[in-house]
Image (cartoon, rainbow over all chains, first blue to last red; front, side):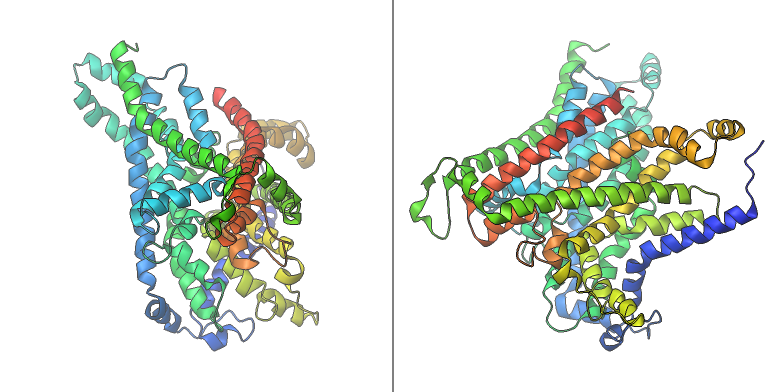
Amino acid sequence: MARSVTTQHKTIATVAAWIVALLIFFPILYTIITSFKSEQEAIQGFSIIPSGTFESYSEVQAQSGYFKFFFNSVLLSVGSTILALLVAIPAAWSMAFSPTKRTKDILMWMLSTKMMPAVAVLFPIYLIFRDTGLLDSRIGLMIMLMLINLPIVVWMLYTYFREIPGEILEAARMDGASLWNEIVYVLTPMAVPGIASTMLLNIILAWNEAFWTIRLTTTEAAPLTAFISSFSSPQGLFWAKLSAASTLAIAPILIMGWFSQKQLVRGLTFGAVK
Amino acid sequence: MATQQTRSLARFMMAPSVVLLFVWMIVPLVITIWFSFQQYNPLNPIRDGFVGFSNYALFYSNPAFLQSILNTLTLVISVLLITVIGGILLALLIDQPMWGQGIVRILVISPFFVMPPVAALVWKNMIMHPQYGVFADIARFFGAQPIDWFGQHPMLAIIIIVAWQWLPFATLILLTALQSLDGEQKEAAEMDGAGFISRFIYLTLPHMSRAITVVILIQTIFLLSVYAEILVTTNGGPGYASTNLPFLVYQKALLEFKIGQASAGGVIAVILANIVAFFAMRAVGKNLDK
């Protein structure tokens, strides 16, 4: 007996789910709508039809140089991700293909570093950054973000690499493939999807990191998180501009996020839920 | 067939990650512990020196300390309750056959990708603002007095914002787990006459238990260190009403320059996180053995 799905059941589920989904999405939707209003419209009470002006967007750029912060966000999230991959790929690779008794302990230990609260090391890091001139520098923050996400990157790569069947390697070896050929022609094509997924998730996490990016930057290296936080003590009314800045800050990552739902589940549950 | 050569190669490949993480974890932590036994004030260095446990005593006797621990736990537990229960219900709902399921999923997951300062500012100004927020508009529509969320109920306001950010995560994970439930098992249970409630309790819930554990653990790690949401909304106030432990440590260190006390607070935060981590590691480790 197939599960009988009545049209009525389906209709109720559809209506209920859409209402809840729209309620959850509403703050984002309303921000996007407000970004196309004028400042006056924005504070004139609830309305979901904006006049459609792009004023706020051009003002955000003109007043605060939005694109500098945007550029920093891109640079920091992509840069830190590439750094993390460079360090993590060999580690995950060796743990997946020649595991030892201690592999699991090392993995768990790496994960445990993620549990250290950032505030506990805020001042030492601040001092180290200040004394090495890394404060408010892009490279310093890039290293910081790399370190924060490194455990997740290693873990995620490890769960992907572990799924590459070892027999294929042995077969290649039997056929006389050198280690180099093995890596280039056999392993790399199979590892690329996993690496790409890891990269995607890590860019999202780095883009949204909002402790170190705020505390270790002032102007030069400040990404969008720091830029948006500067709106918390406003001068005058700025709803539409805030909305425009917010929309610009979240749009790229929101769209990337939509495509990375599966990777997100896997990456953030350390392979426990697939 | 791990030969001596491949083993040393493996060690060589692992070294950068291990060394980096080790240094990153140990060096700052040791400095923090050292500072926690020092009087150190960059603005007033006259009395600097070793002070034993008095930083801990000072931090402890500060009325804000107890309040901040309480706020930290309130935030973690409330958000966990809301997101886990809400997430289960939402996952069950979205798992039903419906039109436009893909879009519903996208809409529900979206808040997770919103960076914390944006989430906090949007809620603060557009939704909860006592004059111009949507909640105020709704209240006025019904002839009620708009609520001053951040003045009167600062913790509740922050809980709502943080729960909004994490509900999508819980829903997505639980939905993924739900969808991996064997359809045949469900059918068999249905044929045996099990109703929706008993199917849920005896079949669905046990199946989701691992996912629920993971959701609780991962969220706890992040919820223990909520920071940006407080910074841009209440700034910890009024008074210390919405100050959590990370925020208190930040205030002591970078606003008051009481480095010793801040470090003591940091050490306490580490201890708190370790208690949680202990359970977290055990559970995640168990899942690995499968």
